[in-house]
Length: 345
Image (cartoon, rainbow, N blue to C red; front, top):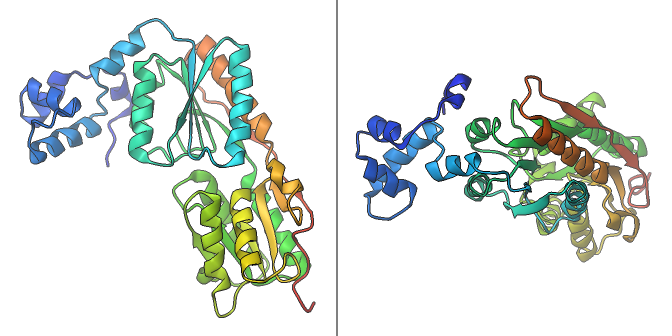
């Protein structure tokens, strides 16, 4: 898609502009926007495409932005079942509550349509700010249209021109994989979300980099992309274990995947770390109390949420600024009982 020039974001498009561009009546555009079901599929698709290309914000959404602030902050997360996000949410809520705001939690399940719907609803309800974490924003032009009216902070999320919180996750994965290599592992698997989310792109690239740096072949069959739940970690690991020559170690994209791997490995009659080593990523609370305790790359989860919320509150009070802020927080490898030299070495 070719996005409009950034200066166009500041122009307030109207329903008349959409109708003129589409060659249809204003009432037709209105019916498409309101999903009335009275317009033919061909015309509906045509109008929807023009709305997307012109980055049109419906009038209801624009009117919401003009009304009094609601003292509400939206938080869009991809997976409420992951303990990482639960801890992150808690830290964000503590900060926004302390500053007199109510947190509106939106769980997108990495569904692009749901994500867009949440963005529009938060704007219509006059939210003062939005935080995105570990999402892949399919419609960045909408956010660019909103950024002058709503404070926005992205956490491990690719939104150009928006304040962001990042971690050294690239270096963290390299440190985790290097730990396995130093133990003597050369057959190392990698299980992760997939390429859409920026954080997982970084971790995949880091995994490849660590192997190549050490002269180890990157085997495609050892790299498995799946969903974003612990259950997905289970199925991805099953695929690795079913290979004729399975890996002796696995670097997981997050701790939830690592614990899914635990279950798959135990079901296969294997032992951790005697038969296969596991390294996670995040250092959620379960990592230290699992059996065996999980070697993992620790992210400062609470601090990530705290910094994101404080930056958002600052943006709400000060308004839009010319230069965007980027905060990078450190990761650290925590070595526990889930890693050991490969069997026979």
